[in-house]
Image: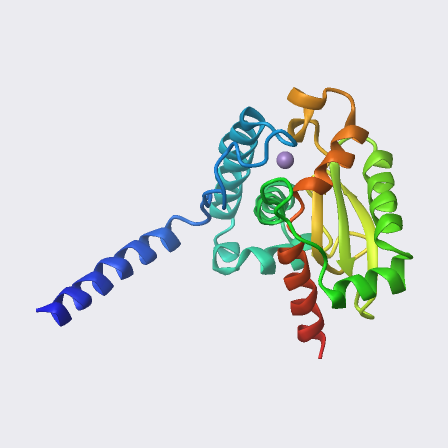
Length: 230
Ligand code: MN
């Protein structure tokens, strides 16, 4: 009886999985409550950012992919690495979907993000001077991005850490950007990410944001990027 229950549960799960695939991309829940990042990022900003902005990227990506059936076979990462062959709608909304999923995972409650792993800290010291110098340069990259976009910490093809910035919803995975690599940290520079609380003070947002960076996640991404290169 217990075995039959398990089989039935597996059958139900397979139905759910298939229908999710048939419906295309979907918006995952945040890995924490909407108010978890306050006061660095307030609850209302998180609700609008995730529930409306990110949801819109997902919905519009599904529409764009439905318009080109050949694309529907591809994973999100595969779409982005050959985005030059797709439409502006796939570039903007595929980037928007990937960037936001990555961004949510990059953060945790203020003060609970830990510190870079020894391996990551050594690479930061080697390639970017020191952790403080890295933070200052990352903030400067965010401040100097005119209009909307993202600041990134990437692992380049030769295994070095590099700070980059992209406009709009582009990211370092895309074959259309100058600085390509494996992102391990990214911050959203769009006004929708901070305007309710910080208004025009993007620099204050960039400074406060370090309090919610999840260094455990960033360190794991760095280890994974290194492992993949070996
Ligand atoms: Mn955003």
